Structures are given as C-alpha cells and as structure tokens.
Image (cartoon, rainbow, N blue to C red; front, side, top):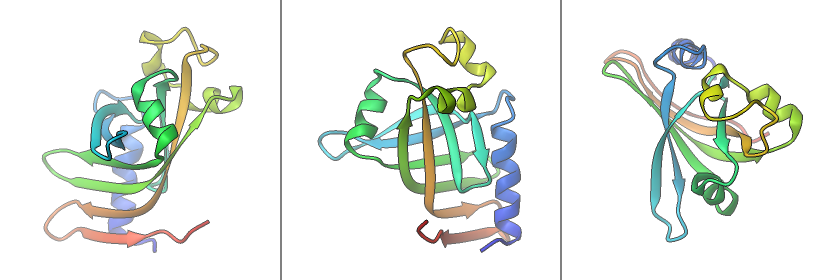
Amino acid sequence: MKNEVVAKAEVIVAKKASGGNDGHCVVTTIDENGYPVPSTVYVAKADGIRRFIFGAVLDSDRVKRIKKCNRTCVCVNSDEYHMAFVGTMEVLADPQSKLDAWNVRFEEYFSGSDDPNFCALRFTTERYSLYLSDEDEDTGIFPKE
C-alpha cells in the first residue's frame, strides 16, 4: 500500500496539520435530504493519510449531520495538487480526545480543550484519490480494521 505517491501526500498533510497558515481543507458531510454540504476546516492532527483530527463546535450543524450520517469526504487542494479521502467521521467529546485534538488555531473560538462546546472529529480514510502532478497519481483502498 505504501508507495512514493502516498509518502508525498503524507508530507503535504503533515504540513497542513503543523499549524501554518495553509492548514485548511474541505470536509463534506451529508445533510438530512442526502445532499453534500462542504465546509472549510483546519486539520488539527494527522496520522499519515489514514486519519485526520479536526476540532469543531459540538452543537454545530456539521456535528449534527455527522451524528446522523458519518460518511464524509475530506479534500485537500492547492494549485499544485488535489487529494480526496472518503471515509467515516466520529464525534469525540471525551476529555482525552479533546485534549489530543487541541490546536493553537482553536484559541480564537474556544476557552480551551475543556470548553464544553469543543469536540474532536476523527476521520478515518477508507479510500483515496491522489493527484500530485502528471506523474504522481494514485488511488487506493485501505483494508477494514
């Protein structure tokens, strides 16, 4: 599974999660009518391209949609590359998950990781499509855990 293109994608995702100004991506959830709803979020943490952690407002519409339908898509894009990850999202509100997801970017919106309206979103990739350049393309499926 691990190949050169995946390794390059993992470096890009790690940079997104490092706290720089370009740490955003798009998460698409499914609304109550079955339509996709994209929203821009910051990547708080990442484990390669297999798992992404985001912070969110616990009582937000996005979190409500995830609780109803956990199938989601994460897109990481720039002028140079496009990466799409399809999988599932979990809403985590326990103290340790919130602490693990905490990122300095969230200080503007929350009082800290223990803020009652802060939660972590953990995305697990099931399949992916990577386009990093004309020579660097890959699609794949992760085995079920």
